[in-house]
Image (cartoon, rainbow, N blue to C red):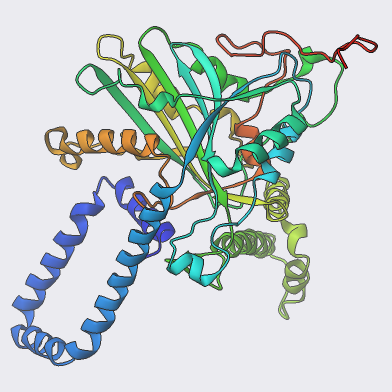
Length: 459
């Protein structure tokens, strides 16, 4: 059984060829069986006889494996739905003069692994470390920020948020995703999920790359790519809803149903990426020696070139290496990114689908990573991938269900995570400067001030 990360990568590779994973597997096995049967039927018969003979060995192992998977899913499901969750609405301060660094500091305080510290917590109680959902929702063009979490953490989160943004306002809100007016008889839904195009350790273009972490007294010089998302969310009209959520949890290491593994695919893929770039640079150096017809019978020049390692890298490659190493020194979240557009059927605008697909374009650059759609209603490019829209209907219902329950990790949904550092996450979810005024963005009406000194009291 492949890990989620590798299975997801293999599925995307198949879809790039117009092949659907759900069909390829059974067809491949059937064809392989028929070919083997026609080539050597006695060998096939011997294989099945041997399989039956050793069944007392492999059947218990197989059953034990799947029993463990089902057991972990069951106790995690029970644990998740026993938790009391709350949705907090965060109204932005009237004046925001801090850079996204302030949001990065706040997100750093959410990085914790409580809930599954011991083996008993994980395998008997179904304990899971904290899962947060950072959301932006536009209802008919009115934009609001939300945080979905366990209720027991409410006071802590509020105090930490006020520590960075004392003029913000945090209140408990009615969950907009459970709006009873939204139903599939009257409404159309379109949505997708995102993943990084390259390895997880290669970051997207962040606010530091846009130099938003530097103090400036000239607001007109601030260029915040995040306002592109807010402008898009503020552009929808009546009977339209546009939702975006980042479901995040602390990254530890690779794990398999309650067991923490020794390997860390995030760090290993980063080292492999750097090694591959250095190897490619060394090959370019070798090819250059050959083209220049430089005599090097003992390989001294080649050894000297290879020994310089990173010095052989181009400027773009060096920038990539620096970005990867910077990410490796940051706190890391495992994330699920999901966007949904819901509108009444007579108001549904297909152009907003394209807006969701290209929503993260301002954060792409040749030397950085890219957030691209990977799952959802964008995977059907050929007629044979979805017969009569059956799979579209099912995926549409699943997207809505998963969004409402903030499901991404464990049950009832379990997917390969997107790796985002606190810096990347703060780039994608922060309060824009008050110099930026996207339409429909809700802010506190007036700045609160302390009572003047010397005010008479009843004491």
